[in-house]
Length: 469
Ligand code: URA
Image (cartoon, rainbow, N blue to C red):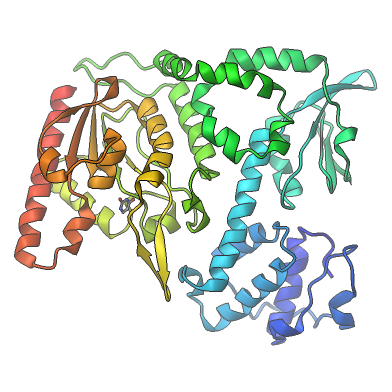
């Protein structure tokens, strides 16, 4: 019997004892105090082992800690099944095609998204309490994430007195101590208050269009969150001016003085804030169905003042797991080709047209699938933000999908390769092949020839970046 629906320590202790005692998953019933039924069918837990005879990968512990927060009643049993299988298959966590692991990964992903949503959509309203202000918010999470998220709100609103009310639990902070209370109803939370007018004014003034996801706001933010946002009433007007505001905001971003050689200057604090905000939102992206199968959003990375940006197609299997672009075989080929071409990857921003891995599961393998035009279009939202923030002098599309994302239309590599194309912000676009294309060429002589052409493209691009300053 677990003490609470998010009782990870209780689950871990019980699971360890049961696994060491060799208890089969089918013989265990997991229950949460106050939720119904008897304790493990009445049987006591096996005794605690003196020393743990059972070690599990750290990644499993992290996965279990997140998955426990899901509202699916089967989560404890699924995790225990995975735990027992890890004994005989220590590398099981690498097998992303395993149905059990996929199911658990899906639960963990939903929990992470719920955590992001709570951070993004909780709005406080001021009430008076004992002559002092208390800020109260109402939120309806999908999963048991409230305790796990409390630290975030304590850090962010450390000096305020606040309460977050949810249907199952409420948490209260007085500036020093966090207290828990029972669940509440929407009626317990203040509806409108004097602070709301202030908040709306503040929101309109600081409204950061780089953080605005018009389509996503409507599709991703369920109505229950939408209703909680006092600024929601302002959004239609703000959206109307968003593009102009965004351009103005990015143009205002402080940049270091231009370098003597006409260099691009370093990224300002606004760029960093805007990039971090956009990345955070992309982590919870549901703009197209690809988020359902992938492990995580793989956002771009690199200096925010990079003069050069590379766009790939989409993360591959390894990138999906690592959460970073171009770290697998195609990335290694790209790295080597860049070295030979004299281009420093560390000075480039590297991203993908599509930020989630698209694949077909075949047995234990995840076979890459090319994203379709709709998926590329949905993900252009994020690419446009990256381009607006980084404002590279030169953008390189690696392959046809990247070229489609960069240009907004389908093009043929052979016709567009080798010449500059004018892009927004005065940047130059260049198109070349994708490194995976080179990896797939079966004939060694042809492969060497195509690889040399690719290196030559990169060398020309490197020269061009230098010329652009
Ligand atoms: N292929 C891509 O297009 N991008 C990556 O990040 C990895 C492989």
